[in-house]
Image (cartoon, helix red, strand yellow):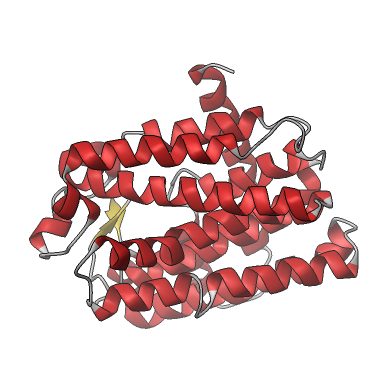
Length: 297
């Protein structure tokens, strides 16, 4: 699959995710302003990488897209909630996200907090409901919810954000801890969720986990690089924001060239884990790994 084909694959799947996300929120009986705030950030663009990875992992193990779609949408809701809260004045205090005003700049801090809360809790409702919608077994649904709670909670994504906010960063190990939990944990869970739906065995799940942690870290290192050498129009925010905040990053400690070397090494190590004897067709996952570390936005 060439670059054009993987771009088309991502766009096709991202469009289907977006349509389903909109449908999930539009049908809610909830105050109009809350619904508008949820939709504003949920449909503000973005690569939809996490749900696409979930769908591709399911495909690689023989699951149908419609079986994985509810969980994929739940993952994007959790990711969006984390971005809304990250942008708040008490956190990163950002005015723009993906080239648009951040949620609290449009709807106020109170409604932005509630929109994030609503997206997080509704994500768990959607997964809980998959036993009826996608005909998954109750045990599979419980496994997904347990895994999702762990990856996104205090020992996962929220813990990574807390370490980031704490500001006690002085070396590569500190930064790696933050990125592994703030970014990689949700990416790895996205892949495992597709595995859960497909009925993956322990060895397959371990491969998806390790692959996700490596490409997730490479993904975040590239974000640090793009903050220095990226195109503002493409990444949707000002470059050198980390420098302006005196933030210690991979780039500030290692330099751009060494970061690029690490990105390549992590990606190659991750791809080597997707052995053909473990997966029916890992080609899309391999292509997605390359896409993630060669993007310029």
